[in-house]
Image (cartoon, rainbow, N blue to C red; front, side, top):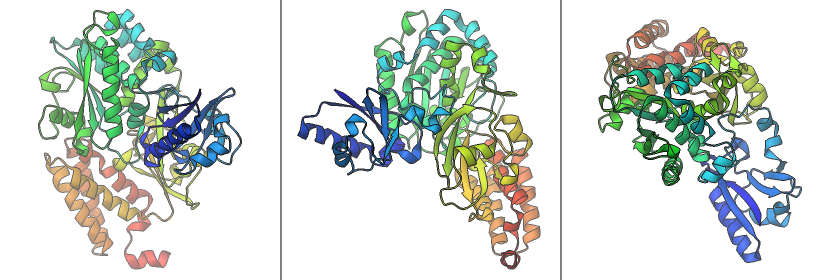
Length: 517
């Protein structure tokens, strides 16, 4: 029996992976070939999807990108034997893009069957939960604190402190909430791990439950991820049936169960308090803080809210120890970060590495420069509310403090590349426009500021009172940054002001811009 691995990840499905699996099934039936098709997550090399792998005596051999309609020719050329072909990339784990990574969180993605708990156990799954049960709440929190893990959703708050706050909070009922409302442009790490390794999130949430005394968890997942919704729900059923979840977690005295809740696509629900409002069945609007969710969160109870990548980092930390995790990274940015490289770039995809690479190394060496072949002009890090960095800042190390010192933010580690055809005035206008559309409307700086900013930049585009309009934009940004209730309004100034600072020529009146060209 020859095993063939075809991704079920959204990258691959969008490029025809389901059709490829159907074609191979049909060909196997017609030719009476003994084939087992295993649907896996993605390895993260998006430009090679769908990446089809075949198990051979020399290991798994990959072919990609395979297009629907090419399967028959590939089979004739010796696909099932790992034969040479123009689309043969060899062993995926030896590919330079994969081999140079430090895969702690994504070490199983693209390798195992996402819904096989046996596969998960065979690749070190549940070791962290087993040790967590043995250590107990105080021991778990000590390990997570020692690791230096910080929130991977963008705020970078120390995870151990958040867990200890909830553990120490009075009350018998507590909750764990996974923020899977991945709405930033150029980000896909949450989706990839949920589609490719859902038991990792289940294990991480169960560990959080044991650590804090919470017995119920929710995965707040955006409706735009139907594949992730289906796989997470199925994985939870498997985990419950196998005793990983339920009244006795792995046979221990700890109880923990969880479920998936689906959002309706509001960007602001990625903000933790808006998310809680939505989970409670209310309109997704920002809550004023304090009280913090760790004290009064879901249904007024102490609640841990962590990003998906924060939670799936925890099983490795508990299995290997906080000190082992802390060995990776620089400064206060410890461990690994899954870089999501997108936009006008040759090698798009997910690249997990320790903190500390420079932005230039990520864009030029890992990403391979632009797909168009034109020079890189700007890179936006941190989603639609992230700052635009010019090449002059490409020596900035990828860590929280280094980016903050240059007026940027890491966010969810989405990296979007633009070549020299980009109009930065239009990009700044888009930031205001995006905020105006997505604002929950609760606070005036965000609700009004974004609309006025959009209108003012439209005057700049028309050449009306350019300098006065730009002065007004700077004032608006200052008000939004310091007066907004949440990061939606508070971070919108980052792309606007960075575009103004580093690409001022794009904001000049039309005659001056034409003369410069």
